[in-house]
Image (cartoon, rainbow, N blue to C red; front, side, top):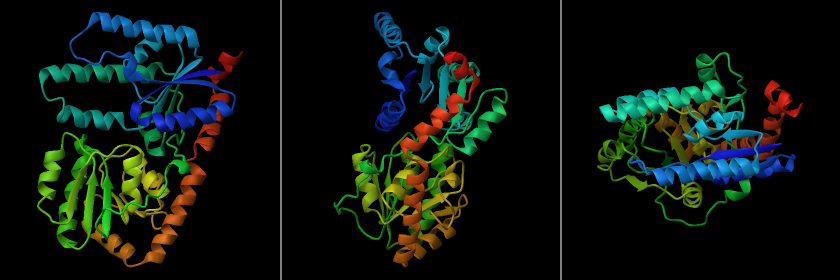
Length: 358
């Protein structure tokens, strides 16, 4: 069996680990970065466009994949569908809610609306023509089944981590006690929950809060938070090394999001043995077992967040208990070895795979 894995460059480090485990199971894999084969500029450069199409066609001809595993949906999928190569989609986020937020905010001009509609059509056709859809959380499984009930859909917790690559740093640069947040600022449906931080900063002046991340809503968020002496914005951190350094030094990890398909930063904080407090949305409850591997809070509940921060800072033995439980859970459920075996089991029981083998 030969699988071409098409992914986002930001996830290459994880997809490589996945590929290694698949190859141990006898699957031949090739991993490519989708944007290497897509024209990036808005103005059409026909020579470049033809060259890129030639490159991907040559790659497909030489590698001869039995199926395509899409880590995200891109224009390349049009080529795969035309060639009738079975595609498998890893569903990592709630496309539909995120698209609605983007429509209200980012795509707010006639020209941008055209781009938005094209993207919606591409996503819809990709789901409809796919051989298999793999949502990475029960929350996303429910969302995709509502929209494509006739499709072949299987749950796969496919957001693994290699614990050996997440080592605790000895660098000590932050002010303690500290709470760290790590999240993008591009989707208002996610980002707006950070406004809750104002009340927390005001009531906890002796705790320093560090926010790592950037995006189009930076000014809306940062301008209000910068007035507090106990707030520091760090901008984007290089992944994974600066991120692991950051997570290894903070005392508590806090995720304030209004929309999450899964929550990869929560997994990473757990690997670094940092206690997690997170909003009870999307797929987060599938990682955080409330009161056992972390703490869940309702949206806008700054009082409960303050309560949990104080509880953790005043109780080192609780931190040890919570982080031990969390680390054990991550290693048991989210290793690439387990994910690869579950992936192969899903393939073997699906009709399209059986037909391909015959």
